[in-house]
Length: 317
Image (tube, rainbow, N blue to C red; front, side, top):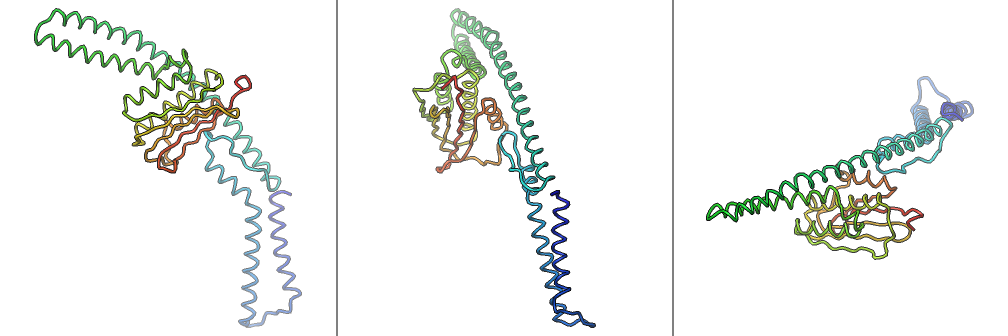
């Protein structure tokens, strides 16, 4: 039955019952109207309006649920769908909306994959240029400063030594940027070694205590999954250093039950779930690339936990 006929039928039932009561009930209307008759009419009208409103609300409930989902749906949290219910028009509308979400999520995942792959390629290019151009130039400057300091005397030698130290510090910073842009250890030694190197550098530069728990029996992961896990860990550590006001972090990597789970937990001040920035949304986009689920929650102790759960393919099991 269509929505029009359902609403028309509900109103017909209510008005029909009201008419029947007026026809067969032993109630008449006097002129002038009596108080008891006015009370009966007002109560009857109230009952009729309440009944009609309740029936219409029941009939319109699927549309209300659809409206709520439309205003709250987030393509970075896939799988939000409505059960098909209601009349012909409403059920067709819900089916069309669910199909539209399927298309939008697929297109979002595809476009995000292209954008992130292009981003990684650009990072590799910039890292290569920093390594080959800036890094080699600064190394040459260090050699020149060293020779000049060896031939200089007194105050000039001290100043040249200071220039050497400044240049050496800048060269170390360039090398650190290169490692962040292109984690070469990830390609050469794998995810566990890359995460170990990442957490060691993080602890050195921030002074925070980092505890690692890496499963020794991890299955072999493909390059895309390793890169997503590494980037999520990198962004989580960066967020913890900038915003968490934490003293201790725990980084865990486990593989069991056909999934790989990466979790980063800090003891900071927690997070407001409604205030996700570009970094967190970037992590969600990366999670979509490998069909993973990303949960960012506050822990019972007041800190924040980032948990990425990625399903393994048959080849990886």
